Image (cartoon, rainbow, N blue to C red; front, side, top):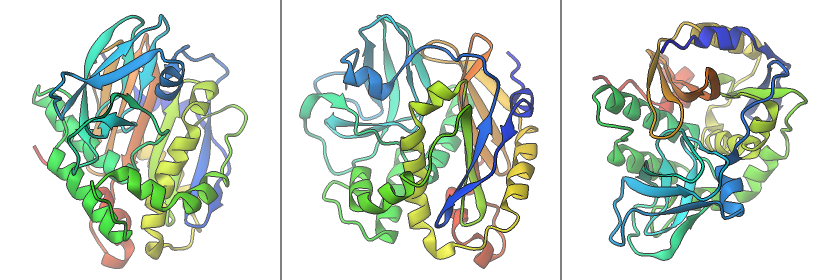
Amino acid sequence: MLVRVKDILLALEMGSGLSHQNLSMFPLFGGAAPGLAYFSLDEALGRRLLEVTEVSDSGDVPNLKVTNKGEMPILILAGEEVVGAKQNRLVNATFLLAGLTSIVMPVSCVEQGRWHYRGKKFQSERRMSSPQLRSKVEEDVYCAVLEQRGFRANQSRVWDEISNKMSRMEVQSDTMAIADLYKSYDDQLRQYTESFRQAERQQGLIMAINGRVAGLELFDSPENLSKYFNKLIASYALDAIDLKEGARPTNGLEDRARAWIAELMEVPVHTHASLGLGYDIRLEAEHTAGSGLLHENSVLYLSAFALAEPGNPKEDAGLARFGLRRRL
């Protein structure tokens, strides 16, 4: 199935940028067509319509069982975190879970030092993994999908990223839980998130850190973006706090954002069967990693990350941490 990301991006309009300290957002506006009706992970857990558990009493680190107990589909995004059970996990890919169905969902551990139960069911703390971590998972899953190994990530690489981030941000955690990063910077993160608001008709965003484009998040409607807006901003804010020392002027940032969109339009797209409804889509180029979900000829969600090119050490000191290529 051919997916033309170019056509999707050409239909968007980019609004004026908003900034708080070293984090900037450019809103993306689309048409007025309604998006698919679904519950988000947070909504479904809050309504007790979604059950997330270990696959067995003994557990299995790279897998969780998810059950939709209602009739409306549930969208679970790549990078969303669930907490509890034997250890906290992040979701490796985006899945649309049909009503009254179950799947075994590929995940990665984001709490290395715990393997014992804290309740039998997972909950949400309304948290999304940072783009630095998500971009690395995107690269690994892309390779795994091409090699027909499913939606698997490199667990060691996930732990290394969390450990390095904790070291840079001087956060101590008995279990090496990424949750402790967010909790340690709760006040600063709140200042960032309160500085950005979703505009009317906005269905996507381009984020920049330290005057450099970091990533894009796009949904099929403004209503569906609103389900995730705050947790997405917080995820980019965590990286912005981490990278503050690399801050630089934002002159010409809008032009750079538009140029990056133009580059993104030409990135090859690969489509694969998903574990739930729809089709998984993967974007991969020299300095881009992304993914999303296609359902009934509509892209429900698309994320893409700008991976910094190695070069001038002063120029790339910060965002180069978004990762170098992982070659097949």
